[in-house]
Image (cartoon, rainbow, N blue to C red; front, side, top):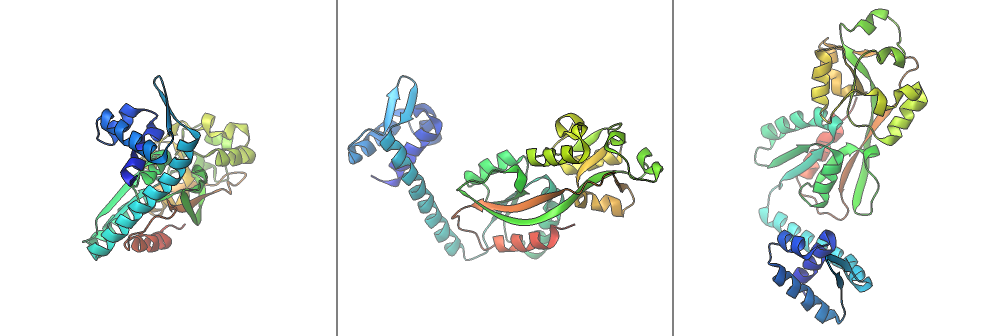
Length: 300
C-alpha cells in the first residue's frame, strides 16, 4: 500500500467513475483498476462495488477513504512545509476575495505588494463564494476573505471572524429621492432599479423583517452581480440604487459623486466578514502580510 493507491481510491470515490478518475489522475483506466486491485489485495477485501456503470465504496472502502483523505492531506502538507523551508523567502500569496472585500482590498493590496514586496508572487481571485470554496478545497487558493453568512460551517474549514461592515443604500448625488430632504421608505426606493450582490438567506430574512415582504431580494433586486465596482458605476450613471456595504462606495461618496440614502426605518444591518482557510493547512510566511493588511483596511 502507498499514498498513490490511496489517491486513486479517493479519485474514484469523488468522481464515481473509473474513466473520469483515470482522466483526473492522468492514467489509463486499466492502470487505475490495477492500482485499486493492489490496494484491495493489500487489505484483503473489496473496496469498491462495481455494479454496471455505478461504482460505490463498500463500507470498508468508506472507512479507508476517511483515513486516506487525512493521510493524503498530511503528506501534501509535509511537502508544502519542505518547499517553504527550501525557498527561504516569504512564499506566494493565493487569495480569494468576496465582492465586498474585493472592491476594498484587491487594488490597494496589489499596489502595496508591488511597492513593498515586489519579490512575492501574488494571485488574487474575486468571484462567487461557491467557486472560491471549491478552489480553496482544491488547494488552488490558500485563503479567502468572504461574507461569513454566505458559507456553511464545515469540519475542513477554519473560519476566523474579522469584522462587520455597515450596510446601506447609496445613489448618485443628483438622485430624485435626495430632493425629498427626509428619510425615504422602501416602497419609494422600489420606483427605481435596486442593485445588489447575491444576498444570503439570513440577510434576506432580516431585510423582510425590517421593511416588509416587498424587500425580499428575490423580488426587489433588479440588477444583481458579484462585482460591486460594476454596480457602483451603474449607480453613478443612472437612477439605480445600490444596496450593500457603504464602505465599498466610500470613494464616490467622498468625491461627491454618490450619497447615502437615509431610510425609514433605518437599515441597521451589516455584513460580517471572515478569514477562511483549510483546517490544518500550513500557511506561507507571506500570509502574515495579507492578514495585517486586511486588519488595517477592512473597516468602515
